[in-house]
Length: 232
Image (cartoon, rainbow, N blue to C red; front, side, top):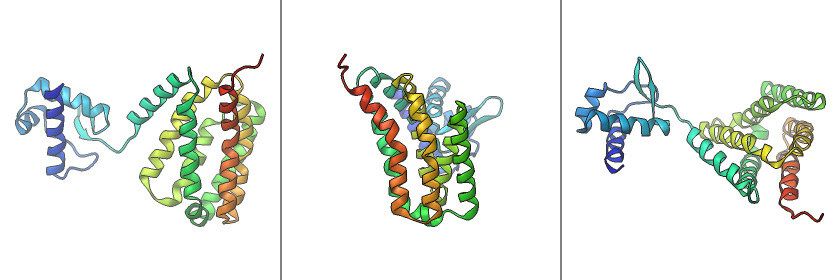
């Protein structure tokens, strides 16, 4: 384990020293062995470790490339912890909801002022689509993901976009552990997206914060109800 970590550190150092960028091709395995002073087996193990962290990307038949920013490892870890905590009190799910709400409320002024007419129109279309799908009993999760990513688009901050998508993924994976009642919460939540759009259209940051909070209320209330001990 120690040797693998040392070689992985050597490969990261090589990327930095040679000013490689995401998408750039790394040297061949033999060249990497020489560059970091390690055996082929050690380099292969190190590359596997770095690939799991999305630091490098292995394209079979083409080579190994510097990876693009991804929070896939964070999503997998948090989702697993969330599934574990479902056996207890859904602590992780509650914390993920907190993070999502705080991000969206915290950037409300920039979002309210930054959304252009095209983005506002797209948000309205997505919100209407979610409400209609929920009324029919259809799945609307992909529309929901697009909505929340688009809401953060005016910030022009790729990390915020990545975090928004990552925490959305975790919540979508863990929410079904709340039981069959989660479908009712999702249906209600779908209808609350339009208030977010209307606040954004009015360029009203305070109303946007309120609408965002109201949109998370159904899932918060469901988590709280599941945590309460049965009185039956």
